Image (cartoon, rainbow, N blue to C red; front, side):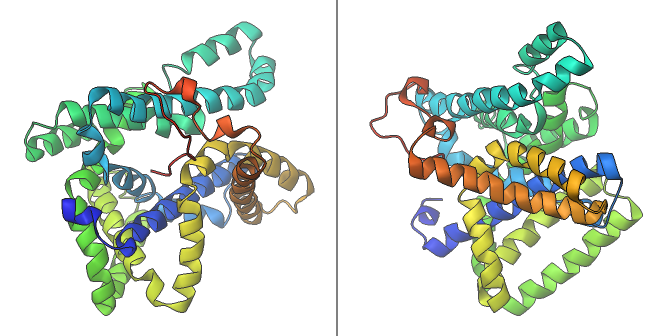
Amino acid sequence: MAHLEANSKQHVDWVDLAKGLTILLVVIMHSINGVEKILGEGWMHVVLAYATPFRMPVFFAVAGLFAARAITKDWSVFMDKKFAHFGYFYFLWMTIEFAFKAPFFIQQTSVEETVLYYLASFVQPFGPLWFIYLLPIFFVALRLTQKLPMVLQFALAILMKFTLTGTGVVIVDFFSTYYVFFLVGHFGRDLWFALAAAARQYKAASVAGILLWAIVNGLVVWFGYGELVPVAIIMGVLGFIAVVDFMGVINEFFLGRQLAKVFRFCGQRSLPIYLGFFLPMGISRILVLKFGNGDSGLSAFLVATATVIGAILMYEIVKRIKIGTFLYVRPSWARLQPRGKQVAVPAE
């Protein structure tokens, strides 16, 4: 894989674009779900349903692309960059989000139960932050099993997806549901980078493949086959292939280049967006539901748009005024290894 590290910026660019797409889809999902719980399904539900087969599989496959580099590091470095890094941001933002929601929890239950709920969030991931809770566990699992044959690792991951996705233990269910896609990103790394390069070379074939996938994905959603485990695995992998293909050719077209700017911008800030989107989402939902016209689709669209913009503004303001940088930059005391210079949260 060494040759991939030396490749041109284009080869890295598609990864940022994919990250941007997935973080937008995740924010849109939470925005739609929140609005539809109150107003019922609207036209934005179509977007939510269509993205379901590939949204999270692509999210985790992208995360697996650079796992090889992480799992070969010394254990102390590995634990710092994976467990301490994501652990710090999970604890910090879980506490912040919980503080905003605690009054509601107390009203619904009691102070004692709310405190117990907070403590339980160290074991059972809280709300949408389950991704950064789960990701270090993926890396550890991969590191501990790296000497096993690839086929056996996939077999175990697929077996878990068939048998352990309904245990009721959040971390077990999510691990079993998505670990196979993390392996797809990890073991197929060379293939995915080659595919992105080939997409630019064979644009017509790439576009045809994307259109074919788009139709198949729509049919799977329409007929409700996406919940079947074999179909879910196949469509998740095909969705990742389509996203790699799409990001490989997106800059070849004028409208695509404008869209790519949005994806790239969001992809380079994917973790800050993910950490902070709950706050603008909650505020915008209250305002839209209070002053909007009651249309569920339009309300969900407005909330999703305001959420993305709000999360980015939060990060950019903190970065520029340099107050509250601990929200997005892990301070030295939270590092297992000393580091001379702090850097912004990496979007990997």
